[in-house]
Image 1 (cartoon, one colour):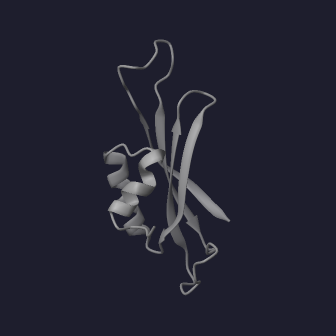
Image 2 (image 1 turned 180 degrees about the vertical axis):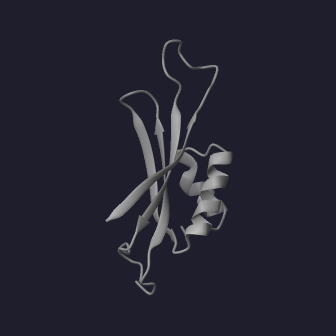
Image 3 (image 1 turned 30 degrees about the vertical axis):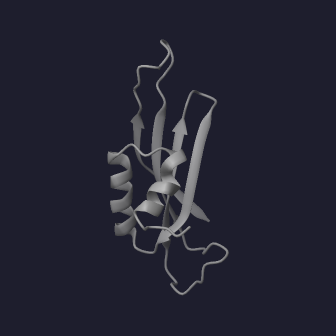
Length: 106
C-alpha cells in the first residue's frame, strides 16, 4: 500500500486567469511504501519514498504525475520536494526535472 502525504499546496497566479475562476493550484505529496515496484529488487527491507505532483486547473480538471520510487532515504526525498516547491514544478515537467537532477533514470 502506498501512503500519500500532502506536503504543500501553491496557487499559480497568472495574467491569463479568467475572473471569477479560482487560479490553478499545485499540490506536492510524498509517497511512502514498503512494497517495491515491479522491476526493482527488494534489497532494502524498509520503506521507500517517491513524489507526486498534482495540478488542479479548475474544480473538475486535474493533472497528476507520480514517481513512486526515488529513494529509501526520506531525508533525500524531503530535500528534493523542497526544491520542486521552491521552483513551482508542475506535473508535466516533473519527470524531466528529476532526470536533470539525476534523481531518476530514464
